[in-house]
Structures are given as structure tokens and as C-alpha cells.
Length: 330
Image (cartoon, rainbow, N blue to C red; front, side):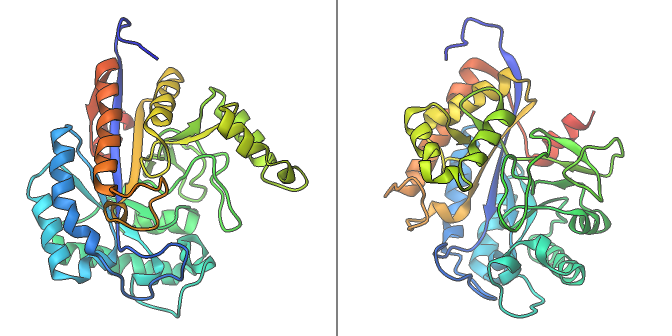
């Protein structure tokens, strides 16, 4: 879609990175500790992002802050003063520990409030001690947010959350019905918008290759459930582009699909685009969902192509997540 001859629409662009340990996602969670070799790649990756004018937000989890070398690498990035450090909680490697973590317990919202409170305090303290930063933005590991967690975040000094994953639900949590664009979230019902200005929710950008996202999400979900799931309609629809769920994520979507999503979102009046990814994908590993063997270069190339397209066709303002929130709050 060529919009070069039209007046350029303004759009805010945010890239957030879940900065965390690497492991085989098909296996068990790495209890209590994790390998963080991928953090060695972050300074070089950050330099490339800076050349694109991107001001990334790194949602850092506890495992990253247990190794001197990974702490040093994150400090090198912070010293450039063109990024934000947020907090990212993985219950399986964030003390204090209350037993091994399985699938249900891997979602923060499934934990007792006392456990979440203790883990939030430990995570914030660790970030302050190692990176000399007090985080104001948060993302739960594996997504999802509820009233008890949102209240805890507010009580612990956070003012921006990014745990809502639009148009998604599973057996452990649901984000269905939440606004797909940034909003003031009700503390007790954070999937609902409110006029009370306590916590600002900044969802990632997810949608479809057709404009009515809510309608197509209902169709998509309907065909994931029996008895219609046997038809495999969603697979057919994806391959024929009749209906394709797209993510502003270079791990999950092609450049063409991400650009298509950006165009539709901007046409729908989205005030910002929120790209997201995992630091662990900077390494060669079996979790790279697009099957690329040169993960680092692939991610950099995909991001560059999307950003270049946006800068050619729109008036882009690059922000960290809190910078974007401050602009959109007004």
C-alpha cells in the first residue's frame, strides 16, 4: 500500500523487548535460574536499533540480573540514555520461591496475591541494586493481568503496564474485550477503561489482515473450538489470506504482514504502534518461530524494513513505552 502521495499521518512507534533467560520453550521452565547468554547480544542489537532511531524499552526479568556479565551489558545500554528499563516477571526464576512452577503457575495472575507481592518487591529491589533504575513500567511473563496484580503494581510505584495481549485467550487467562489501544485501566478490572488516572495500559499491536478486528477475532476463535476446529478453517484462511491474524512481532509475522497490520491499524485511528519481541531470539535457538538460522540478522533486517516503510509513509515519533504513555495520557 503506497501512501507516499498522501499527507503523512502521525504515529508513535514503540519497541519493547522481554529481556530474559533463554530455554527450550517446549520443555519445562528453568526453575530458579536461567541461562542468559543472549544478553551478550543486547549492546550490539541496541546500537543497531539506535541507528533506526528506535528508543527501546527493555522489560528485564530477575534471571538477567543474577549474572555479572549480563548486568554489565545492560548497564552499557542504559549509559546511552536512549532506552527505558521496565520490570518483567517470570515466576519460575523470580524469588522468593514457593515450589516448582508448572504451566498454571507460570502465569502471574494465577499466583496468590501474597506471592506476587513478594516477587514484585524482590524484582524491583534487584533492578534498583544492579542497574540503579527504579522501573515504572511492567509486563507480566506470558501475558495477562487482573485486579490483584494491577493494584500491586500501583502500590509499588508503577504507572504503566503492558501485560494485555489483545485478541487472545487461553485456559489460564483472557484479554478478550480489552481495548486494543492505550487506555487508563481500572485497577480492579484492568481490561476495562476508566477515567481514573492511576495505571496506564499500553497493549502490544495485534490484529488481522482485515479491518474489523473484533469481528475477525470472533470468527478466528469460533474455528479453534469444537465442533468447527476439525475443519481447519483457520489454517486455510491464513494460507489464502482470507483471514490472517497478524502480530507486530518479527518473531511471529513476516515483514509484509507486519506492514499490512501497521497500515490497517493507522487507518483505524491507532495513535501508536507497539512492536514486541524476546531478547532470547537474538540467539540461534529452536524457539525462533520463523525458522531462521541467522536469528540476529533476521530480526534486525525485519525491524529495519518495517521502520523504513513507516518513515517513508508516515510521520513517525519513536518513544520508550513511558514516553509514549506520557504523550497519550493527555
